[in-house]
Amino acid sequence: MGEKEKNKKNKKQKHQHPNDQTTKPTSASASSSSDNISFKPSSEVKGLKFGGQFIVKSFTIRRARPLELLKILSYPPAVVTKTNNNNNNKTPFASTTSYLPTNFTILAHHAWHTLTLGLGTKKSKVVLFVFESESMKQAVDRIWPPEIPLGEVNKKLIRGFTGFEMARFKFRKGCITFYVYAVRRQGNMGFACADDLRTILQSVVALNDFLDHTAMLAMPNQRSISYCTPQVAMAAH
Image: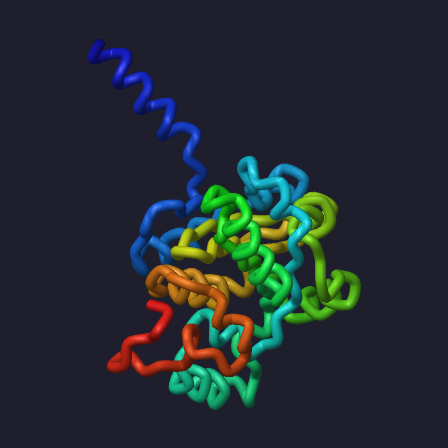
């Protein structure tokens, strides 16, 4: 019996991807993950997961504006100011493209949850792509759609992105699941925007669970996700 239990344990450890953070990681583990990124060809990297909730694939996400990304990460103004001063007023996370749930998706999740008497998921997905350069991000933004159904993300934005490698990170934060993808050209070594990736991972890890994301409908002036200082508790936390 002891050997069987040991074999089962080894099997579980073997199949756990180093970038998959489905438990509650620490800031230190996020920093370590960003330093030891496991890249795969885009055709092989894991995509978004839906379980049995196939209707969710028709729900849409939209490209977020820079300030919206800062707000959902609770990135404080002091850090923004410091970053701007040190980089000639450069926008924070200029290498990152992010997609947030549309208003339709947020309302549809709640309607689906109600119609199914609580069986339908209320969890939304936030998808972030951290590119190895700002020029790559700008080029991709010109060809990627500003809005896309969740069910097409894997096909069009991930596996259909030929000639590139990606590293996937997943974090569950209450009613929001964060998917973070680091993107580089196939064959390149290292990751030029590792600092952006590390800061984003640490910011996501530092977030407490979101209890209700309906306030995201009021973006960018909502109350649940805000620039609150550490001394003031955020309503979403």
